[in-house]
Length: 373
Length: 91
Ligand code: SF4
Image 1 (spheres, chains in turn purple, red):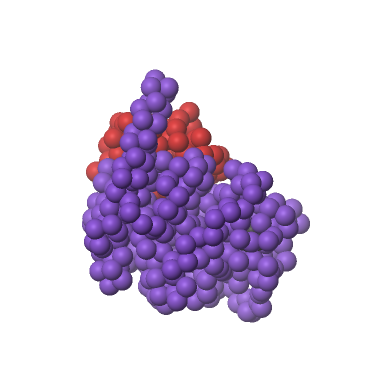
Image 2 (cartoon, rainbow over the protein chains, first blue to last red):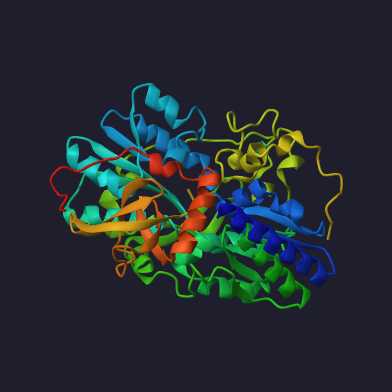
């Protein structure tokens, strides 16, 4: 069964690639925004199957990667407190702060727990009324409704010892920041399918119109990505710039209204710092004033910690599609997933980590200079 | 952490006032909150992200993307420890 399916997929993939070769008359640079798509592209070698003149660059869509060092250090300071039970998704535990990571802090005796859902933290909070339970609320629009719901529920049920350290970021402002960068090379985007399943893609229509850039909302399976790329190239070749939905089986234009309601209820939009990129206006969520009792950033006064990224790291340029992991001298030598120096090496969805996981640090650097505009 | 995982609803129950479901992912069963997809019913396939259903999908879609996530090593979050609450669970 599986065999037949894969055979069919391979045949379809060949068809899409042949069609791409047929319609494409000049070089194009397309960015996939979602870290899950990046992982899938590198794993299946999709970027290497495309015609050489269609280049995929990898965007800022890994929430672990773009969480600023300042917030990671703040999380660590809170997690070290004796009265705190610090909860997090598993992939934040390995992320290095200025000093160490949550695993190290945990083995030094802090109560740090991996949770599957933010609702688990409420259970922990109810079971430990003498403790302060803090959840590290990281993620894009896909994750934010879950975290909002946990805060909402805590507020409603009077779970006073539960708070979240918010570091939520939003995709559309990061796309705008990339397009505004003077060095920008990106000509079209594959929009993040699961993010759009939640918030819909109206906002992407505004972006596409404003910057005259094609955006194709795309899934994360290899065929999705190939098809999304073909749709983007067709738009570029015919000088169209609109939003198309390749992932209609999971995404509707309006998105999930229940999820959007809870987001509005609990969060306000704020400026956010992105690791590797810097501050982007109106690019994140913070808790609304009425939920301040659940806001770890105001409950725990942590003095500002001065942090600095290693000078060798070019992850900021990688996140904006200006460079690729091979362009970094530290890639695969000084910087590996075990000893990450920068944002894009810290999580499996980061471009550097994905390239490393599939052995691309062992390959010679691509010889062709990419097309300068 | 960016991707949502498809699963099948085995049963629906109430926990602390939230509509919840027992969901089967491959061989693993975990709970998910249905508040964001209130129309979901037993037997439906849903896409779950950090313990919350975000949309419904059909069965073929669910099976194919589960297999792909498995192959990509993106199912780790299902291994997070189970945190049970004693009294509130209604069957
Ligand atoms: S390989 Fe490491 S140091 Fe180089 S850009 Fe990537 S994260 Fe930064």
